[in-house]
Length: 411
Ligand SMILES: Cc1ncc(COP(=O)(O)O)c(C=O)c1O
Image (cartoon, rainbow, N blue to C red; front, side, top):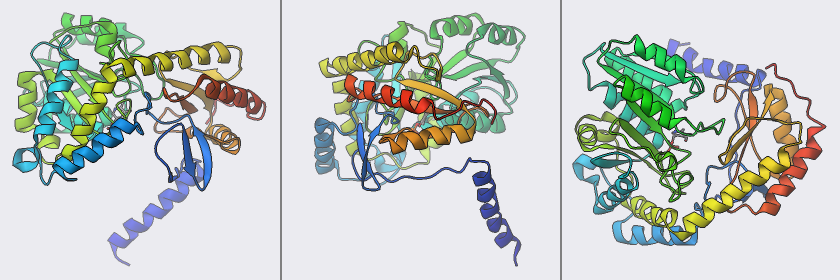
């Protein structure tokens, strides 16, 4: 038996090991559009688990815009942006995305990517490569999303950057670490809304710290863009902050309901990413029809419909707080559409998800390494398409199944 075959055989052993630790994940295929009710295995389930916060993923105007975009531009871009894949639809979208952050970042420009994962890789490695090798420090928040962590790992491998971890709830520690730092490029990298906890980064204080220590601040607003701020422009609008130190990353497959992502920053940095950002340069451009659809989504987000949808979302969050206040489920305080219920062990999280499934709900168990060991959870999320009655029914079901799941904080 050859070495290669043996190595591939080990994959099966690893899977068996994952399964024995209750960490094996399962794909489930939907037969319907992303919405508050989905069809899986010929059953209809009420979904409280997507990131489609504004309920736009199946919006008729966006379905129409995608068809219109395909009629106009075809279905593929054919090449990377710098070869022949860049279209006027990408240009129009980037201008609009930049306009969303123009009050918050001076001389702002936007760059569109096919995914948030790629946008983070490009932004973080692009920043680190601005300074000489070994002269970069990266400060990463404890609960950062995997795409930030992987971007930091790659940046560190490429530039010998030093990486330090900080707790975003305890910025004094970050401040103290920066105080000792004599490297010329210091970058603070974190989620705007933490994807598995739902809490919001203290952006104003972070900008203060960045100013004080001459650091840059890279904020991934994947879960805030579209949902936060009066016009849905995201976390910078919500806190009314302004700084040339901000590198803002937003994704377009969550509240915007479509697909893709972008980086917004002062124009020279964006030009640097176009010239030297490998994840941008060496990847096929997103189909222009998608850019055309996102443009329509931005129109909805910013306009009266977006405002109405954010109001509905906020109402759902209020009702959740009111009606779950007396329940014994362990909740993480969150004022966003992400409301985690901590079960502790993988077994308990899986048991709760199964009971919910039997009751007609789709809320999968989230386990390590997505969340820290011992904090497996149900990640309940809301969409503006949920009605208040839908939420009250879910809360009633949660109260019924609470008795059946014994909480165990040990994994
Ligand atoms: C905080 C955060 N950043 C980035 C991403 C990646 O974005 P995308 O799905 O567009 O790759 C996600 C989730 O998907 C996320 O939760």
